[in-house]
Image 1 (tube, rainbow, N blue to C red):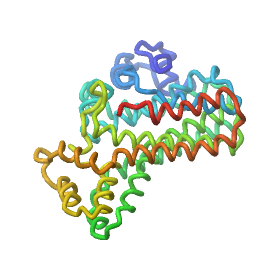
Image 2: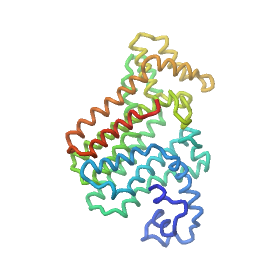
Image 3: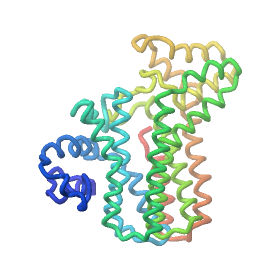
Image 4: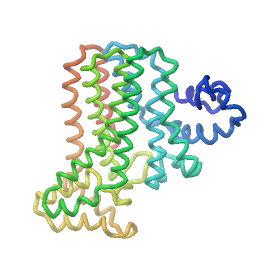
Length: 351
C-alpha cells in the first residue's frame, strides 16, 4: 500500500494529488518528475521498503474489525501509519546521528541531511491525501483530522523531551534517594513518542469502523499501553542487541542516553544500599564517549534485574489495558486476533 500511494514512477495526476490537489493543479506546471521522486519519494521508500514490523497499521485494521467495521475497505489507510512513523524515523535518525535503520544506512547518510529532513517532514502530511478517496461522514472526517493533528503535536513534544534528555534530573534524584520523577518523565516521553501515535492509529481505525465513543477510548488506551510497552522493550533490546544488525548494540549508552533499564538499575542499586556501584554506573555518563565502559555498564544493569523489571512492567500495563477493551467490545474472532496481536507486539520480540 505504501508503494501504491508513493510509487517510484508516479503518473502526472498522481503527482498532483500527492503534492497539492486537483483544485491547485496549475501550480504544478513545470515540475520535473525526477526532482519529486528523488527528493521526496525515494528517501521515504528507502526506509519503508526495508519493511518494519508494521504493527501500527495492523492495529488500525484490527481496531476497525473489532467494532464491526470492514478492514477490507481500509486498505489504503494502512499506509497512513507507515508514512507517519517513517517520517519520524528519518528525522529522529538525523537528530540522534544514527548510522543504521532497519538493517541499512539511515536516510540522511544515503540522500543527504537536507533532503532527508524535507522528505521526512513531507511524509507527515500524506495521511490527509489518503482520506480524500474514502467515503467518510463529516463527523468521521473531523474526528480523523482531530486525532491526526493531536498525534503530530504530541509526538513533537515527546521528541523535544527526548532531545532535552533526562540526565539533568538524575543528580538531584540520586541526592534525594527518589528516582520516581525521572522515571515518570521517561514514561511521559515514551507515551508521547510511541504510545500516542499507536493510540491514534487504533482510534482512527475504530472511528472508520463505526465505534462508539467508549469503544474508541478503550481501544485507544489499549494501544497507548502497547506503544508505551513497545518502547520500554525497545530500551531493553537496545542494550541487549538487535537481531540482524538492525541497529547498533547499546547505541543508547554509547550516546549517553538515560533509558528505562538505566533508571530501573539505579533504583535497584539504591534500594539494595549499593551506593558504590550506583555512583559508578551514573559516573559513566560523565566520561567521554570513547572512554565509557559500555560493556561493563550493560553487565551491571542486567545484574540488577532491570531488564526483567522493564519487561514485566511492559506486559502488565498491556494486560491491564486489555480489561477495558474486553468489557467494551463484543466477543468475536476479530477480538481474539486483537488479543493475540497484543501478545505478539510485546512478546514476539528479539530478546
